[in-house]
Image 1 (cartoon, rainbow, N blue to C red):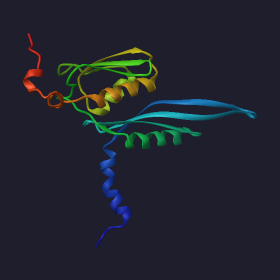
Image 2: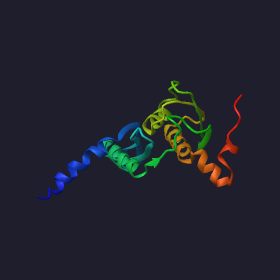
Image 3: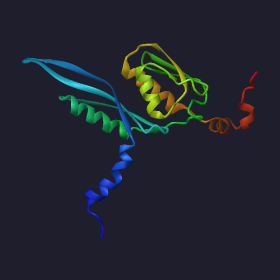
Image 4: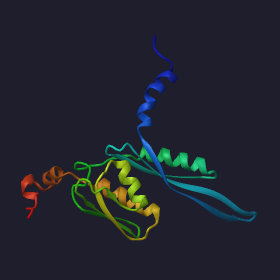
Amino acid sequence: MRGTSQQQHELEAPERDEIEQKTIAVNRVAKVVDGGRVFSFNALVVVGDGRRQVGIGRGRARENSVARQKALESARRNMIQVSLDDGTLHYPILARYGATRVFMKPASPGTGIIAGGAVRAVLELAGVHDVLTKIYGSYNSVNVVRATFNALAEMQTPEEIAAKRGKALESLRSPRA
């Protein structure tokens, strides 16, 4: 006998529960109209499974909880697969969004995530364990999260870079002293 759609949905639920979420910012904004002010909220949420998948989303609504829910749905739709090298990045990368620049550098095992709040949340949910970061320019949380997300999206494996350039993988490796 086949289960009802609700039973089938419950079987799929643990998969969705594996995805963690962190609310980075919730802002209350006001629109001034003839009768006074109309308040609304906008939320920035990061989701990830801690195993190389991460997404960011924004939501706006008249109520805080609705804005967060919209942001969560947006983040789940915008998830990307991140290319990592044993819990760290493949190479140093600088990404920009607006007036914000985020520099991220691979770190040796045991270093941990050396990063500020918004960057840390994205990296933790992406499954990065060891990385050094620095933010230059604006510290606006939306721009910082977007710059970090763009950097992770641009990250490629050395094999992909070698294939793009038409070179052997060994020719890309720098000699270590």
